[in-house]
Image (cartoon, rainbow, N blue to C red):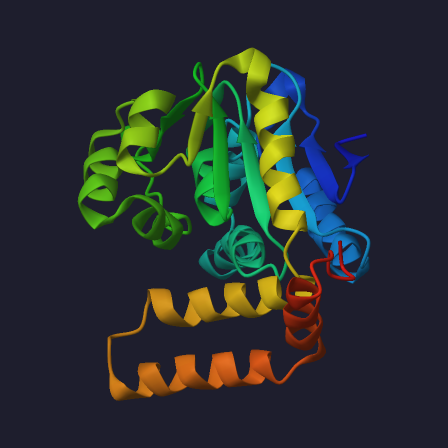
Length: 257
């Protein structure tokens, strides 16, 4: 099974399962991830996704055999092949439920892009990140929007241009990794964060993710201010807000917990 889906409480853990290839993103793995996202989005019992990797690596990036084949394709077909990967990164980034990257070992190239596309990154202290594309004559193109948003333009510029490795502790200092823990504590740290996320109203989480997408790239303007006002007004008029406020006043848990 190239993608192993594990249920842990309110979270679905998507384990990339190509350990012999360090979970490189083959066409088959891309298809499995796309299908899993479709299925888990429709399942109301799943409140959080965790993206993880079996074996010694989180994800070594794109499958080089697949890239070699793409290099021999017509330009139009090569673009279609690249667009497939680009859609997956955006699908993860815009997914209506929180997505947590559980990173151990190498997260290189597209693997670092996967982590950047997630909402939260929890890494073991032995994890490593790198963007070696330029050393192979390639460009970290499709993952660049997520890298810039996750670590800032100045740091993305450094690591995209040099291809140097970035240790997990340093990635945490830069803000790319949200939590860096000893390897033995990695799963517990991810479970803890998933538990916190599951306390939130699912509709409110989806609205907040949609708001983040709008805000992160927008200039500060009267139109943006108006959009934030509308977002709060819409949420406040909804059933989740009524239940959340009522449960707080009544000193009980809201229905979604």
